[in-house]
Image 1 (cartoon, rainbow, N blue to C red):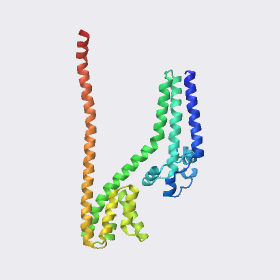
Image 2: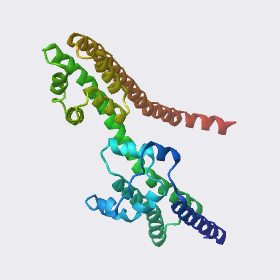
Image 3: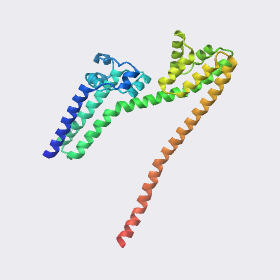
Image 4: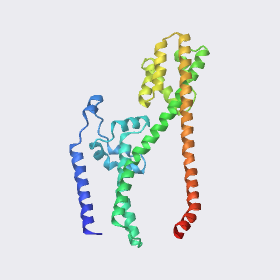
Length: 296
């Protein structure tokens, strides 16, 4: 390895260390964070003692990442949606970052001992790429999990509205219909049932619980359903007519979303066929093209 490359790598490492020290020392929450909600308490390393190996290994880095302002407000919302705590997320992010920094040099050392030559510049680029990917891996996993839960809840709210209409048609009141409709289904319906019971214990109207779920999952369907209940008041006939129309619109929207997903999956499935056909054309046409060019 050339001295110039070693000097460049050393300078980058020193700069990264200085940036981490400055970020830890001078990191402060933004004004928007201070105005929206009180600052969260500093997480303790003992809070992740019951987690997995990644959480236990990265527990030492929780104060450092917390001082750097992590997680962000969007990540906190996703953690609440996925019912995960902040310390375990920070510990997992610390572990993946350490693995991304330590694993590529170890693999390179093993390859060098085995006699496999590795160019310095491509090796350094692969090292940086692996570190960046593993640093972002917890965020990407959390985003996918939050998207799955949001999709599951969007599908559940359409079925919930239909079940409420059926219960109202059977003669139940508004509160009874909501409670009866939330007793069926899986995990997503259980979250609706818990929210409705918590609102009943606080003596809040049921539409406030639905609106809170809409804010938590960032779904307009809950807000629309809550608005229909709030506007309908206590008149059973108007409640049933309003909810029937809302359930029909939610069902139509859900079917349209499913159709769009099916169309997107079909388009993605056609890409390998196109690539295979292009490779076949190249395989068949290359000998003839080569023969024409060599005979000129």
